[in-house]
Length: 536
Ligand code: BES
Ligand code: MN
Ligand code: ZN
Image 1 (cartoon, rainbow, N blue to C red):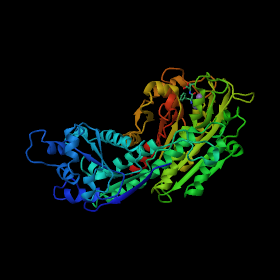
Image 2: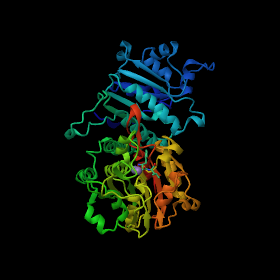
Image 3: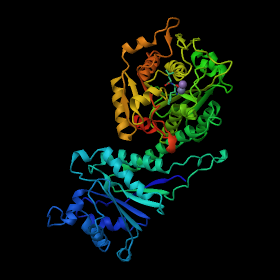
Image 4: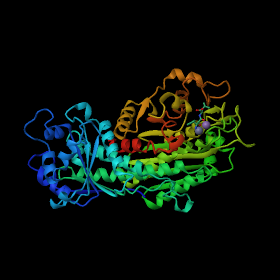
């Protein structure tokens, strides 16, 4: 089951205005829902319990308490109300509620903490608050909830509503995700039971209705893209082959306005992508080159191009990987999945920009046909590459795609790849690695990362690191040794990106989780969608 997200506008509702509190609470609580969710600040609680010796009651708790026949007083007396940020208190309907026209079956009160402190008004703060509220809503018998958005607006400003709402939807969608739900034909049964929580309604007022509706639409589109990216990542490598990825992209062109083109081996050969083909050589399944276009901007407008690494299984090739956890190399197409997911989101939200997604996809297998360490191959750019390690294959397929996209005269190119184990050593599973010499791209991507909590951390690309890629026999070697492995991988790619503004995201540590929580994270779809939304 997936969650339905929607909006409901209560024109005058406003808990901040003392004049409107009473009627606002009446209308909100008078709405039928399994659970009304309200945020409150430390000041609301202090104004009720007189914690600081306040004699005059302030905030919306006094009115709420009247409507609920003393439920708030009760909760406060037993110590269930706390001003600590993200603490929650669930109240269940009592007889007195209905006498006062309350139709909500529950009320979930969520503490925003001390919203007067600037330090407690960041989006990171909000994310803690939202996460803890969403946790209360799932896993029980609650099916629907009414989330009064203005009560969560940390700075009581409309500006943050879009980001907050998108983040709430992102988290709720993440929480509700189950693998196997969207593959009815595949005989994959969702392993764990679907959550009973099915509907999250964002309530707003006239002051924020436009922003709210737009943000909910954007959030829904983003979750759809994330779900698709997760599904593709989680599918086993015997199903999710390059051909399957091509079909998945083509399917989207039937559902949306996306234009999709899939090139096969012959066409890839004709383009001169010798580097890409050298990786595909050891595999019996054919490589594919996918191009997805979203024409949401003006006809002549330079597009933003996303390039995703699509290795549907990485054995390492002749430089075979050790067996431990090799199954996780089915996730080596998560860059591609994030591009397909982002393109889907962008199409669903009818983004008014031109965006192109490009995916080189193949398997990296050992065989009698496979590329050997020492082989020299010719890339589409004309540069020759000495393949010293066949396990450094991501850069070999990406470099030809990066040359291919020159034809689009792009405004910017971002490639996304599970490129190096070294990136996990450097940044763990928290930030994706960001490499770019373009300060604007760096700042835009960093900001988008904060807004979606799908964060990046910049790593260098200096000329000095290029030394490690020198080859005695070709223009460049495909590995630069163990030191700074993620940096030299990025430096390798940079040699193919001189004609445009470019950034590289290494998502080796962030695209999936291992162990008991094994599964695709859908990252960096939120980052990319936010980047595209916020870009002027
Ligand atoms: N797909 C891997 C990178 C990877 C490894 C991502 C483990 C996530 C977890 C990539 O193709 C690879 O094998 N890179 C090598 C490069 C090395 C041979 C220079 C690596 O990181 O070991
Ligand atoms: Mn590899
Ligand atoms: Zn790989």
